[in-house]
Length: 196
View 1: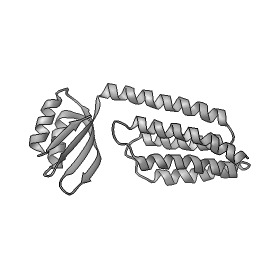
View 2 (view 1 turned 135 degrees about the vertical axis):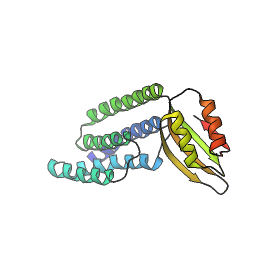
View 3 (view 1 turned 180 degrees about the horizontal axis):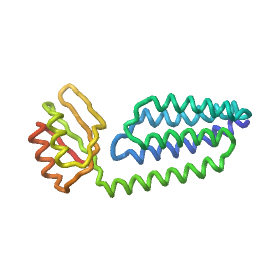
View 4 (view 1 turned 90 degrees about the horizontal axis):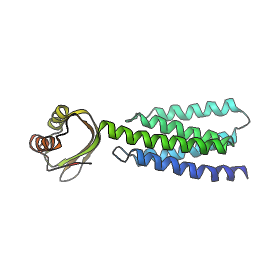
């Protein structure tokens, strides 16, 4: 009976985490596989805490193993750490039958991440840049980006039959996007450039 209560409590919290991750990364860098892994981490942590609830030291040790395995994967964004810890926290709260705390903290964390992410985007003017073409020279693109951007991060690189596509997160130094666009079209030999 307690197992069913835990599952019923975990499902809405997993949905909150899943959609918060999706909202926070909608500007770029969203990884569906990572998001699914977060949901699975919640269920696994809940299961471990439920099974070994009587021995807190053992259950915390097992959670340590989970976090070490998860952290061995190279994270592209530091915010991913917060989501991993949040997923483990949900599992611990529900596994120890602290349903109210699990719901309360999940709502607070979700709102905090969404609000701070929107503030960060407004403050830093982060944009998503898509460069596509069959003869793109990525090294030249990055030299041009260094000239116009405070920061830029390659978040996706794809090679299709008839074109290559690069997606960057960029923080602009200057507001003149048109000059950047013109230089990228000419210098990197791109066929298509889009800012989001």
